[in-house]
Image (cartoon, rainbow, N blue to C red; front, top):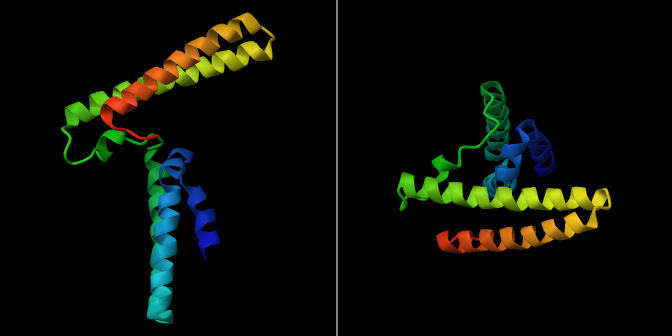
Length: 142
């Protein structure tokens, strides 16, 4: 059952799978185990409702074209929307800079431009340090 559920999770767009699939699978496995203890009727009802809910939700996400996840809706309740949004923007900007420098370094290595690769390696180190400091500033773990 867990394997089938994992296959059905592929109906979600990749961004949603990356963000939620592990947690969804863990919750499903725990609920499945709990329902097995309650008997066959409870287990069958749970499986039917879960699979139809997964199909409905994955279809809704695909039909609405909601490929991107709005992280601002997932803010902790003790943070204001403004402070969370600015923190999120700063962290995402720092992460994009790390990704950009890494990609540039890899491209330079691919064409044997080692002087450029060394430069981007230094830029990558500085960008990663900046990202670490920003995460530390907002108490965000990796």
